[in-house]
Amino acid sequence: MSLDLDKRQRAMLGEMGVRVWTPEPVGGPARVEAAPRDAPPAGAQAPGRPVTGNAPESIAANVHLTLDNGQKESIKAGRARPTAVSGGAPLAPRTGVALQPRPPGIELMDWPALQDAVAHCRACALCHGRTNTVFGVGDVTAEWMVVGEAPGEQEDLQGEPFVGPSGQLLDNMLKAVGLSRHAGVSGAPVAAPAALRGVYIANVVKCRPPGNRNPHPDEVAQCDAYLARQVALVRPRIILAMGRFAVQSLLQTAEPIGKLRGRVHHYQGVPVIVTYHPAYLLRSLSEKAKAWADLCLAMQVVQHPGGV
Ligand code: URA
Figure (tube, rainbow, N blue to C red):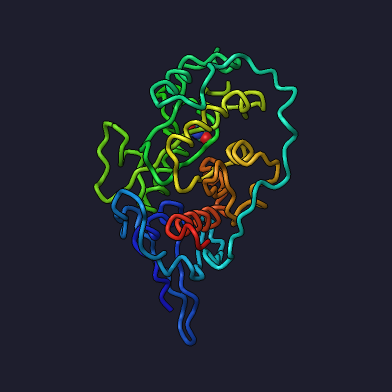
């Protein structure tokens, strides 16, 4: 049996430290199919909408994986028919959060005004410790949008999301599905290979929490209008919500990620796929296969908007 994974999918699995294997045929040993680390993404679509073409067959196949720690996993990447759901267990309404003045009219701002508003925001205590605000990066017309948590040390220093170790893993994952933060309408100084499409990356919280602690609820609440406007301006076809704080902020739910994965949620009418944060994936090998399944589901939603 052949697994029919294409190059970009193998590349992604390789970057994630996951080997693909084929179940033992009758009378023969299992065959391990090494995933090349730097295979160029195959089948990347030309920029622009609408996206056409069928989801790769492998998306619907059983995929057998071996993780870095030798643990074996089989995932049915496309078998579960995800159902559209709204948000899960609701969080308590945002009363009791002492909001400081933010600039009025965020919901009407264009990109320059929004970026300027974030750069000068002093609506919560995080502004005192920041070196830079971390607004967002990538293609402002992208089909895919990634939402992370909050800047870390490197992000604070450079003013760009996901530039530390978890950013490297994120970039490799995105590359494997044909995406790059440097592609598309980004104005980024680094040129991306022509085959890659753009992606827009932003965090829920735009300033670094001291010592990389978790953002506090009031900090998330102060910042979420900025993220809402970024989503409204990009108008992506899919949002990948990475980690607990992205999920809680977008979906207003306290349910754990494990319970929210594998289904299509919505934010501002945009499909949202819930997945683990790259920093968590770097620590938790066994979850990498699940993150792979989440990316497959996101690809399916983009390629078959009405059919998932
Ligand atoms: N983690 C995040 O969620 N965002 C970043 O920008 C960096 C690390």
